Image (cartoon, rainbow, N blue to C red; front, side, top):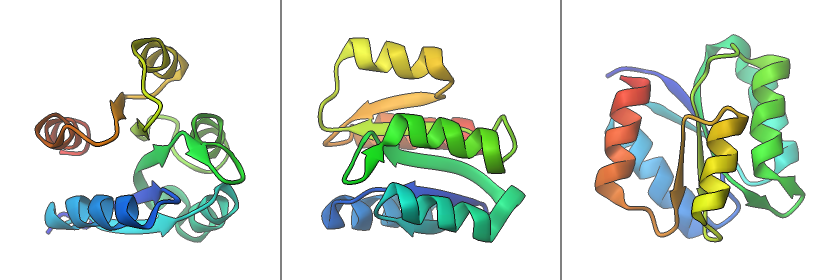
Length: 124
């Protein structure tokens, strides 16, 4: 078991379950948040022990892309990998996310082979 802590910020229950399963199947710990406010609370709880953030770009209480960048800046090591997921995926959005500092950006439903390869590359 790697025991890396990965924050999963996702409001859809089915997507939460799937992302949690993916993270935990790798031996990592999935820390779940359904809103931007919950995500900020979870990050405060674990502080610098966070090893990655997977975030949906469209949350009920805010912009997931801005949230992840803010959390990384305020509470987490600046190099923690950020992985975006969105049902509203475009190549332009991916380019914006990568330019803003994300390590990867994926459409929903997730292309599982590519997503797992990215997790393995970014998180070990």
